[in-house]
Amino acid sequence: MSVSQPRHYSRQFLNNEGHQGLASVLAEVRDGDSSDDYLDFGALFEISDCNRTVSIDFGVYGSLATQDDRDELRAVLENARAKAERLRAELNAFVDVLGEALADVETTINQHDQKG
Image 1: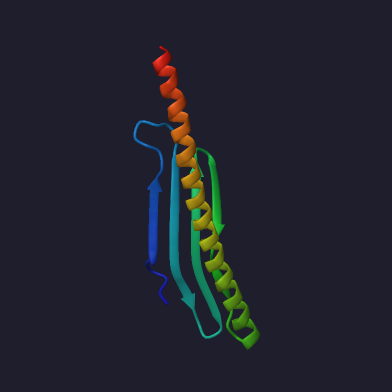
Image 2 (image 1 turned 90 degrees about the vertical axis):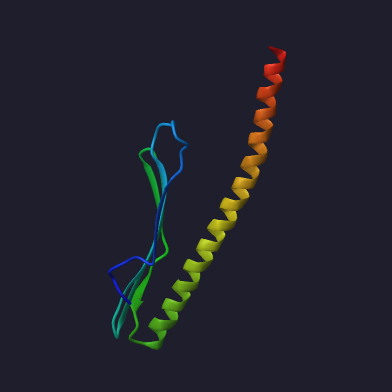
């Protein structure tokens, strides 16, 4: 594996133009480095809003020396994969419910417009 270039790098700004504050999502997957006895694979998902940042580490790193070490790396790898899938499912559910709630809010605003 090569350390030079990330396999995936993305930084997306979340706010619409004209809205203040820095909100962004950064996603990076690096193959990292491996040798005969050590693996270092990096993966990071970071959410920032103004001065708050949450970083979620999906990295897999450790010894390759023994079968127990390699089995542990496989367990960490599967945990990283499952963690990402749960994050995706929860974000999709949040977006769906938020869309419904925002439609209700818009209805309330429109009703107030009609009252004058």
